[in-house]
Image 1 (tube, rainbow, N blue to C red):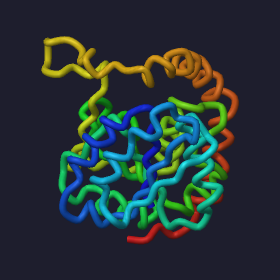
Image 2: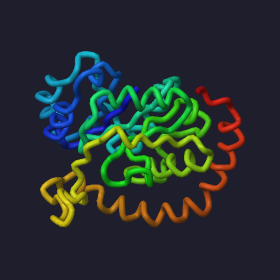
Image 3: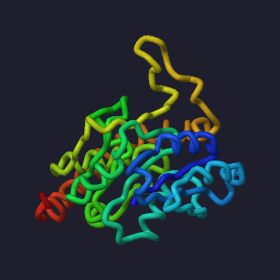
Image 4: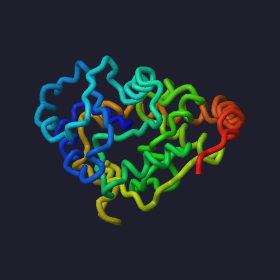
Length: 233
């Protein structure tokens, strides 16, 4: 299943939905909203553009990481867990199914977001068994940025990372150049980015400590407990 947390961004969610076409409309997707989102009722128009088989879940958690972790707790037996974001769009028709099928083979698969490429698994789809062995989807130390970084490091370290350069994710991010040399796309900056700024700054320092103290143990354990399994071909 795919999970798409959204926060104060009904217009951006509607833009995302406008990029969903063909077989991607048949994928299982859960939109996750915070029950106290001040713009909760503004999402009604976006919901009218949702595929009929998509679901909406209004929950207690406000931040992206806790939303995903709560989803992992409440849906513990999914074959795959995919992460989508409300500041993105689908640039390749059928990409959700492609990434899901990769994850069903036991890997962590991610698309080409035009920013990080093979250097970071942004918006990945994970094998459910991979996350169950790991014990979490979004580590509690990283409530906003950084949880996908951890998955990337572990998957690459044990040989189950799969980058799909041919699957293009549109990432409307304020720190992404619109065209080379033309500066950043500051028009994309919004209140949600502003709220996350301090958390993201703290996450950079926290990641250094995490990589030194915690990550090696996680990699060793996953290498023993997960990579030893037969990955389907």
